[in-house]
Amino acid sequence: MNRITPERWPSPAPPPTDWLFARVMLVDDHALFAQALADLLVHERLACDVVRAGSAEVAAEYLQQGGDIDLVLLDLTLQGEAGYDLLPRLGAGAGAPPMVVISSSEDAATMRTARAAGARGFLAKSAGRGALVRMLRAVHSGQDCFPAVDVPVESPLTPRQRDVLLLLAQGFPNKRICQCLSLTEHTVKTHLKALFTQLGVHNRTECVTRARSLGWL
Image 1 (cartoon, one colour):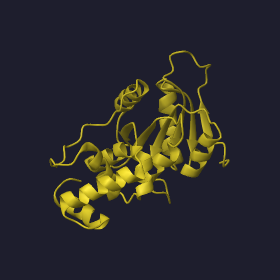
Image 2: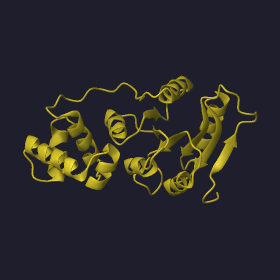
Image 3: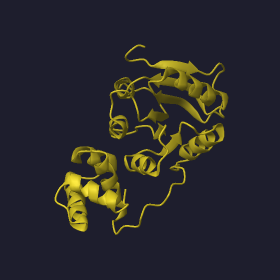
């Protein structure tokens, strides 16, 4: 595959007005899965044109060069690349397209962390056609779309502190947390200090371990 130009699955017909998205990018290193999903997107009139990038590097370069993408579907398990860390990387910059996570993991923690990291939706690889259609229609209308998940044990944390904790548990450094949550470094440090105080710990590792033991993650 060309390093700059991803593979494409254009629709066989001129783009009528009822296509949901003009062009969707699949960031997935499994060609067969990507092709099957691309065929479904075109068949269901969800995307007039689908391109595939087999790595975050190809996807990021394509987007930086002005690739006209309306939506990115991102597999978190790209070979050799760090899952949630791809979200701020590909979603950086003004006018970045919305990002939807595709994952073989369907646990509540994965979904909550994807949301905290900036994803607009979540689709399990085991999901059916109906779930895909509903999710993309919701994202197209400006809504976030995540499957219902079990509510974690109630904690005294604020919503932003919970977001910081979720990203901290994924090993995000402060800079990445800032990018994901659109916060200043000072604000992130303030949230971390509050977390440490709330949990009675002194470092990031102890913070995550204690939060898990309490059922907050």
